Length: 113
Length: 113
Image (tube, rainbow over all chains, first blue to last red; front, side, top):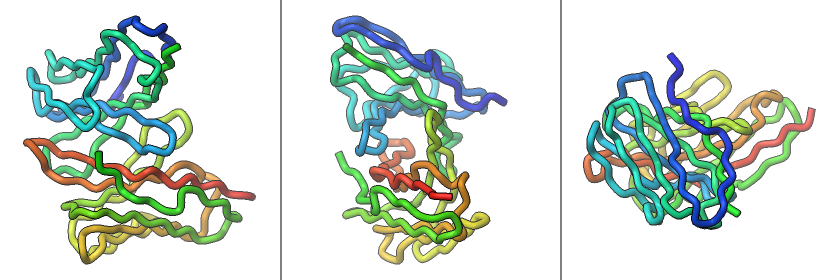
C-alpha cells in the first residue's frame, strides 16, 4: 500500500499560470481533502469530497477548484496562480465520518513568483 | 476561520526531559487528535481521543481529552532525538456530511542531545 501520494512534490509558477495537483489513495477511502499549510497557521481546509463525483468548499476555497472523477483520485486546480497561493499543499483521505482522523500525503511545495 | 490555540509554539529541551503541550478551543469537538509532522512530510496520526475525560497512551506519549470537550494535552516522557518535529492538535467534528478537522498552529520541538 502506498497510502496517499501526491504529485508533483515541488513546483514553481509565475503569477497567472495554471496547474493541477494530483492526489491518489489506494486505501479505498470515501473521503478526500485538500489542505494548505502556511507558517504559523497550521493546516486549513481548501476543498473536500465525500465520494466519487462530489466536491464541497472548505475554509479557504477561493482561487482553487477540485474534481473527483474517480474514487481514488482528487485533483486540485489553480486557474490563475497568485503569490498568496505560495504554500505547502497536503491531501488527506479517510474511510468514513467516524474514523480516527485522516491519512495525509507527503505534500506539494508550491511557489508562485 | 477557526483555529485552535496551541501552546507553546516552540520548545527547546534536553534529551531525556518530559514534554507537555496543550490545545484549547472556544467550541466543542467530538474527537481530539494529535499529529506529528517531520520535515518534508505530511502529518502522521499519533493519538486519537473520543470521549471527554479520556486518557490514552501510545508508548511514551500520553494524551487527554478535556472534560469540557474544549481542550486536550499531549505529554511525551523521556524525550529522544527522533521526537524532534512539529506536533499538531486537531479537533474533529462532523459537519455538512464530512469529517472536518480544525488544526492548532503547531508546537515545534527541538531536542539538544
